[in-house]
Image (cartoon, rainbow, N blue to C red; front, side, top):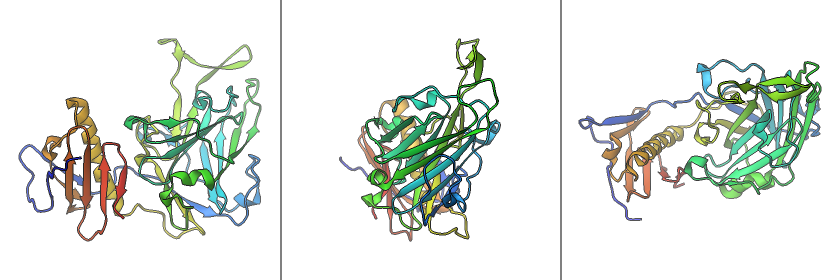
Length: 361
């Protein structure tokens, strides 16, 4: 691709007339983080969560609405635990539920058409090659790999499987029986490293201190009882089921789980750390690139091509954490490459029209 140097920032004192300074002084989301403790012995995957291996593993915070604090808190509590060892990743989730209901029995069904719990993992923290696993109260599984988010053209690899995946469900109540009020359902999972490291940096196992991106989603439908069976409640205005509730661990702010840059953080540790995980300085640089990517998408939608010049994006320069940074952009309207670097930081970070971020080290 022919490279065109657009701007080198860092020496301008004032923004050009009619243009703005892109400032990333803080990260726009209060991303949650979870410290994933290493186990000395694995739990038995039976869905009950009473194995001694889980005793010292902390619960996550309760889930919130996918749109964040602007929406009411979920009606029912959802929490998870996670742990790891040399074999793989362990997950335990508890979903408070007065109406235990599930209908889909065929593997790889669109599980979120039932009540479900969903796990999302991006080992490379680059928004590409990430995993999704869904399971309902019948224990029916749907696992898939996303080459890149749907917004960037996907595709989703439905034929991909987590080889050696183990899951189990435990019900506190009676499934598909509206004659009583239920309590909860539990989902326990074991995900071997063999499949997960396909998208990990260097295809290597996680080590102490490594960080992946993580989120969970719970889909909950409003139900009604008809002829002693649960059915989805219908909106009389549309004659269609009422929209589902989307409750998540780390809220992205809108109803879309396929923006991995907005997920929370999973840190692998061998013992509980003293300090809560905080994203490093590179996170601000990566978010500045993400803001430029968003602007390029909006420009392409309006103009039918990507901006060739930086000022076409309405910007004069970029400041990150109070410091002007060097930003280069090259492109031909069909493709683009943007890089960003900060004085004193040996790495340069990049993003292109695919939405993937990476560094030169």
